[in-house]
Structures are given as C-alpha cells and as structure tokens.
Length: 152
Image (cartoon, rainbow, N blue to C red; front, side, top):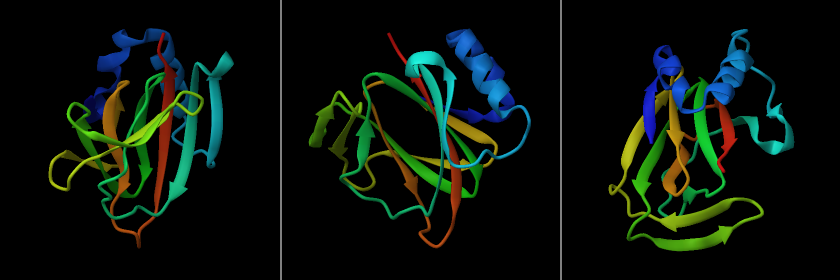
C-alpha cells in the first residue's frame, strides 16, 4: 500500500513507467472528467473509473480486495476515508469472484488504518490488500478516480 500526496506522484513512476505516464497524462489537463470508464491501454490492462457518490458510514463487511488489478485511488472532489488492513486472519464475507476481480472480508471497527483522503493525495492498493473506500459523511459528495492497473 502506498499513501502519499500527488506532489510526489512521479516518485513512484519507476514501479510501472509506461502505465504511470499514461495516468499522469490523463489527469494533466486539470479538468475533472465526467463519471465513467476511460481506457488508457488496450484489452483492459489500464483504465480509469471516475465515480461520483455520497460516502457511507464504516461497514465491517466491506473490506474489498482484488487479485488481478492494482487500485490507484485519487480524490478529485470532497473527502473520505479509506480503511486499510492486511487480509491475513480476516474472515471472508463475499468469496472472490475472478470475473469481477472482487471479494470482501470482515474487519472489526477500529482494527484497520484510516487513510484521510482529500483532494491532492492518492493511495495505491496492491492485489490481496484489503481496503474499504468511500467511508465518510453520507451528506457530502465525492468525485474520485480509481485507476485499475492489471498485474501479470
């Protein structure tokens, strides 16, 4: 897991040089894209989901994980928390589905690390790392980009 400010985004480019450059170019215009999916590389290897939603209260049964994709989450408007926890020792509440690359674990409240997501920072979650995004004030509004980077 990586949690940092966008000012330091280039510091991580060596991890995935081609993909990092595509992501940076996508956001370089400084305009918030309309909600939807944007393919940055062919065959679903790299794409961006721009989402607009109201955050939700913490839910012990919503610690998601993926196996095929790395998540790079960038807040574009508003604020939320992402709860992070290693999956070791957790109980699965939704079995992993390879087609949707998605599964969920149960995490007791207070057991994870809360990442304060605001405009100007980002978080990266690698396969098998548990995270519950979208936690916050249900009366507020958030626009977030979730970059999905397929791993080999």
